[in-house]
Amino acid sequence: MNIKLAVIPGDGIGPEVTEQAQKILDKIAGVYNHKFEYKTLLAGGAAIDAVNNCLPDETIAVCKASDAVLLGAVGGWKWDTLPGDKRPEMALLGLRKELGLFANIRPALLFDELADACPLKREIISSGANGKVELDIVVIRELTGGIYFGEKGFKDTPLGKAAYDVELYAEEEVRRIAVVAFDMAMKRNKKVTSVDKANVLESSRLWRQVVAETAKNYPEVKLENLYIDNAAMQLVRNPRQFDVIVTSNMFGDILSDEASMITGSIGMLPSASLKNGNFGMYEPVHGSAPDIAGQDKANPMAAILSAAMMLRYTFALSKEAEAIERAVKAVLAKSYRTGDIYSEGKTLIGTKEAGDLIAGEIR
Ligand code: NAD
Image (cartoon, rainbow, N blue to C red; front, side, top):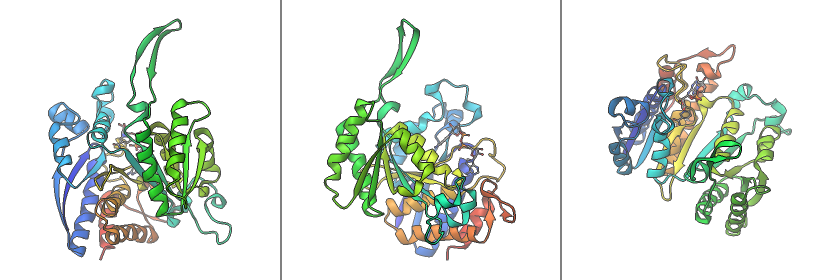
């Protein structure tokens, strides 16, 4: 297969982990006879420094003309004093909107080998029967609607200056994300938990109603509704009850970080942002980690597993995706650990070595 990829390394550890993901893709290309053609693009702080615009038109155009996008991370201390609408992170919102990426998919999978890195007690994350660690959740977050994109502004009130952000969801926006969730559940354990705040919010009541309507087309899937406050609690009380969680932009932002933390390290978690059809942008869940940037300390596994998700979701190359996931597991099983997942008795490795070891496991 000939694949045209837009690559946005971004800032901080973004370029370091993206380089390792490309190393792995090149290895896959050799072993499975594919060809990846990369176009490296500017976005985020790097783009502000180069062209004074966090999301240049060329970046958007090349992404649109590519088969998929691989992104590192954007942002950093250097640009923290810029006004909100000029910050590097605006590039992410812009890319999602411009590319129509309305569905953010974040698997929270705890590798057996990393059970000790999970902050929850062992009995919570393993089944009573065989003591095996079983934590495999997918959080599906609506990405282009809701309060992050609603009307916002300031007004004067009797209590002084006030600010507002509007949460607004159209039926079709809810339906299409619900379809992604139910389709995903059909390929997994056939359970969808829809998370909202329908006891208080009108937008959540509409959300709940549309999700229930969509569920009628998936009689095999069990649908459960939870309020966000309860869902946040249940995720640490009994995370094994979840299969697919679907929720709005803001609730998903928070819940997916919580879900990621119970898997041990943010350095392990990949994500996909998809639109209808096969196009997607793939990126690690973590940010640019300015505290460890440029020190060969970043864990590249989230970026590498994001490349695996890309092969699976955009190109239907499941065999190749599994080869990458197996290689990551093999390196963990051999006790190699980057700093974020290190524990006593393991072998500490850097970013580049992690990439080399994983590449070496793909044969
Ligand atoms: P962060 O994810 O960058 O870092 C949080 C902590 O996790 C840090 O201690 C960091 O060292 C560690 N960490 C993160 N990724 C790691 C990895 N791969 N290996 C080892 N350790 C890792 O979050 P933050 O500190 O809140 O944000 C830093 C910058 O990144 C900010 O400018 C923020 O806006 C931006 N950000 C960008 C994205 C994105 O590009 N998608 C996402 C989140 C945050």
